[in-house]
Length: 307
Image (tube, rainbow, N blue to C red; front, top):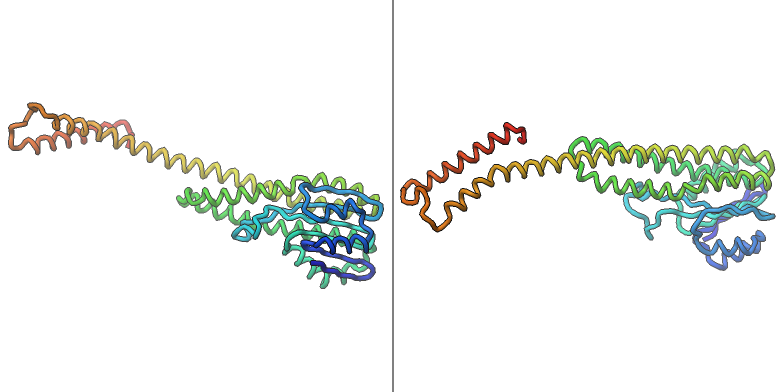
């Protein structure tokens, strides 16, 4: 699907899950190099930035906050890829699944951006504002994850440690996806700093530096959430371990108390001439003996502070 917006000599072209015919059409219209056109046909495994004579080709992967959606999106993807082709007067974005953040920016682009930033002279500024918006959408996801961690903290200290194991595992998966997708962005943005100044001029350095700052803010938020998660997971595991040890301890003490009774029962169950065998009150005597032994073992356990 192809969407196109034009204003004041600048064009933003957005392609979602493009067909081969759409890619060919766009490549011919904007004179895209065959190597770049080939890469647009399918998702790429890694992020990168390439400087061509007429445009900058950039690939970035952004994480999908599955926890924020309440379930994994259709297809089960962990990240979403955006290919950027940034020319002097055009920006082409290519992605292979619907992206709410791009849809939101399209509304902003139509209503606000074109009115407030129509003095900008090249498409690099559109790329800057779009990428900044994408990082901003990640901050919303990280804020949501932080809220989930706060709720998990309350439940851990309310005695719901077992229920929190699954939730913390889900949080861990989301944080892992965030780190995997974003870990290469710093290197890519550093390369873009050089390529962007060569292509758009030294005046564009401020915007590229600001974009790096937006990334660093997101990365610091991610690291803060990760540290909180690690502390909560360690606390949860410690509390679960304490509860498990208490249960094992209780079962061990109960076995210690009732083991002598088991021996008494087995002893009087043998087919031999046993004490009290001929007495009519032998049953009650055996019960009394078992009760006395249990009381003594219980008193010993309390004396040793096992209970």
